[in-house]
Length: 78
Image (cartoon, rainbow, N blue to C red; front, side, top):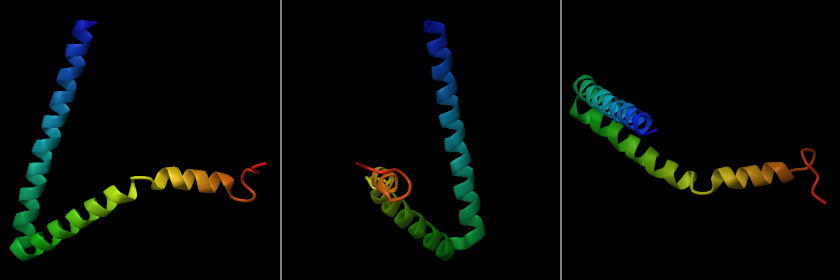
């Protein structure tokens, strides 16, 4: 059991490290291709999208499930 935990932990750590290296390479590539001005616009847009997405997921999936399941013709609530 302990060996399995260690193995899975190392795999998770390597995957996280690989993702970080890939993100770094992509950021450097985009910065060089887009230039300072366009990369700034891209980065600003990405940040705004992340902030809006965070607020969107705070309760929207639960609300949609509840509303859609109670809609007429799908499931009748008595």
